[in-house]
Length: 145
Image 1 (cartoon, helix red, strand yellow):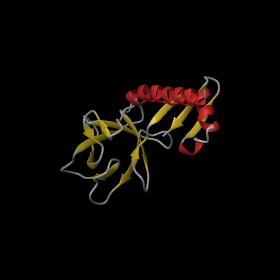
Image 2 (spheres, rainbow, N blue to C red; image 1 turned 180 degrees about the vertical axis):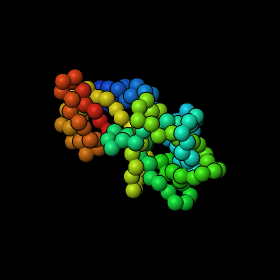
Image 3 (cartoon, rainbow, N blue to C red; image 1 turned 45 degrees about the horizontal axis):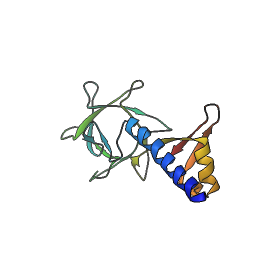
Image 4 (cartoon, rainbow, N blue to C red; image 1 turned 45 degrees about the vertical axis):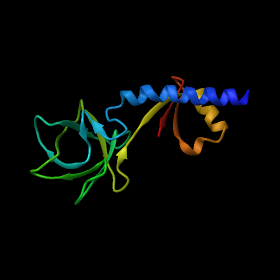
C-alpha cells in the first residue's frame, strides 16, 4: 500500500508540473520565443524583442549584469551596439519579469501542487527540496523549484 501511495504521489507531482511549465514565459532551457536569454543586450524605447519588467519577487528570470563573457542563461551585458537582442523596460504588460542578482542567475520555475500532495511530500521528509508558500483559501501550494 505504501508503494502504491508513493507511486501515486510521484505521478501526481509530475502531472501537475507539466502544465505549469508549459504556461511559463521562459522555457526551462532559458529561451523566450527562440531568444536565448543571455549575451549582449541593448535597451531601446520602442520595438524591442522583449518587454521586461523589473520585480523584487517571483521573477521569471534572475539576471546578473556581466562585465564580460555573458555566456550563461541570465547573464546580460548591456551594450550600445552589437546586441544579441533588445529589451524595453515597461511597468505593465511585460513579456517577462526579471530580478537583478549578484550571483546565481537562472530561470525560475513555478509549479502548482495540491495541498495534499505537499503534505505527503513533507511527511516523507522531502521538504528539503521544495520551498512552499501556503495558499489555503484556494487549496493550493505555490512551490518554487
